Amino acid sequence: MVVSAALALGLVFAGPSGKLAHGITIGGVPVGGLTPAQAVARLKARAARLQSVPVVFRAGADRFRIRPEELGIEPNWSAAVAAAADRGGGFAVIRGYRRLGLRLRPASFTPPVKAYDAAVAYELDQLRSKIDRPHVEARLVRHGLDVEAIRGQTGRLLDRVAAKRVVIAALADFSRRLVELPVRTDAPTITVADLARNRLLARRIVSAPVTLERGSAGVELSRRLLARMLVLPPDGLGEIVLGGHAANAYFARLDRKLAEPARDASFVVDGGNVQIAPSHAGIAVDVPRTAASVLAAAERRIRRVAHIEEAVVQPARTTAQARAMGITGIVGSYETFFGGIPNRIHNVELVAHLVDSKLIAPGATFSFNATTGARTPDKGFVAAPVIINRELQTALGGGVCQVSTTVFNAAYVAGLPITARTNHALYISHYPLGRDATVNYPDTDLEFVNDTPHWLLLRTFVTSSSLAVNLYGAPQNRRVETVTSPLRFVSPAPIKRTIDKSLRPGERVVDDWGVPAQSTWVRRKVFSPSGKLLDDSTWHSNYVAEPKLVRIGPARKKAHKKPPATTATPPIATIH
Image 1: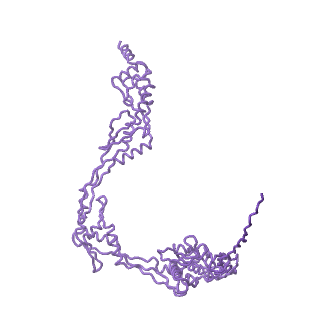
Image 2: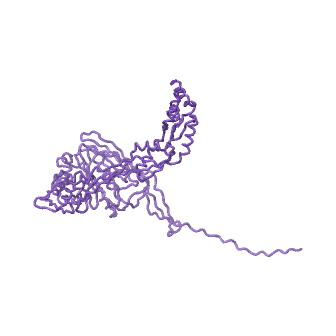
Image 3: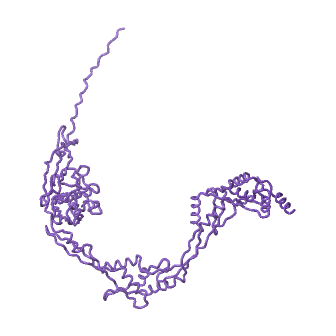
């Protein structure tokens, strides 16, 4: 009887197998009595209506509205319905008891949810930027000659991991209730009590002046200066130091006043002789050790006396290093003569100074442009005659090419490899034929290589009428042979005619006979002292023509013929 009654009870509550059991909700929506397809359709329809309806999230007094469609929220309603059907399914009797249990204890199912990860991450970043308020640690602050401890502040931080779960679940749910975001308190880790020791120490440092001594002399650092030098640790717990702009400026002035600069070994030339001026070590204020001495004195209550600490400064080039460079005599030398306007002479002197004393290491390439840099007004260059676009004009830096030409010829006679050289556009007769060298920053350069085993020193000497360039090093005693082609006319000078109304018709005046286009070449052979051929190079030079300038009188005016006089013809009588 009992078994029969139990079976009967199960059959009574079993209901149809194709429908969901009563007592089941999905996403808060009752779906009992619906087929799985009906349930899925109902849930999807409701979700679609809510895609643009925002959920309000709260963090303290702040409110944030987010719509499901913004994050690509896609609940899997079919999976949730399938789980619900399984909960209330089975054979008739078993199904009945399961459904009876659901009537007594209803069950709610939440669908698995997919979301657009990039959108979720972006939204969480936005929330965190508006919610997060990191704590502020207690800190030390200087006000004039006093140091105070400022209390820290408690902050708040969004729990990003938990917030992701909360946001996605709330947007997938059909409820539009206010949702609390998971926020945690961010408490300071440093308190005012933790800063008590450093606060007392900082106050002691600025409590009285410090005397800074060097031998029997001394200078006082005032309380106000010590306070400006005081650098309090950012966290309040680290070491207190003296530094910052005030300390740097003070110790820099002290060093300028007391330091004895080191002197590098240098080369003193007299004609072909080279002597080495010996190097000397210098003395400088050891700023870190001096600052540490001042701080140690300032931390004491009595005997607040510090000492200036000094350090030996070694020269960048010692006497021994200078000797090892092997610069003992002249390797190559050349002199050119100049004239012209004062501005041109000024530029020659200026650029000669820029290349003067240039040291060239063994195997290194000398670059004229790299050594002088751009020829600009701030360096002192002025306007003077210069060749531009194949014409003689006036421009900034005129005269520089005399220096480059002189340097070229010094390297030429020294037998050094010349790797970059360009002739002038116009032929200049006062330079050796085919051995001029023009430069233009930064594209047209003069370059040569130090192929000797020792350093080279380039020196310039300017007089009122000449420029000499000497290359000093270890004399190589190379023999240089030169063959120069005669200057060859390539094409005649073009004629540039202008009308001069002051001249008689047909009259011609030649102001400048011009120069035809010309060319030449120079071949240089370099031999070692033993006669071995070291280099065989040829430089070609092509010079453009300068026009012949001719003024011509205006054309003769043509005489206008008068028309012949006309005689009136009497009218012919007509007989009718």
